[in-house]
Length: 53
Image 1: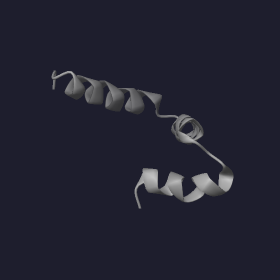
Image 2: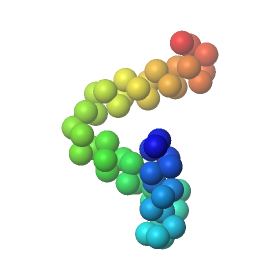
Image 3: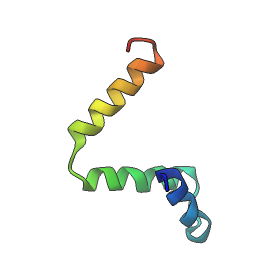
């Protein structure tokens, strides 16, 4: 199951909206203590979006 599906599975029960689901995802990322890896991922994704891949 992908990450979005997992969040959606619990969102209705917990009363989460898109913002609260994003907050939960960010909390999980922070708990992994891998901010450098996340920044690398976001950097690459942003570069792909603006055509700098």
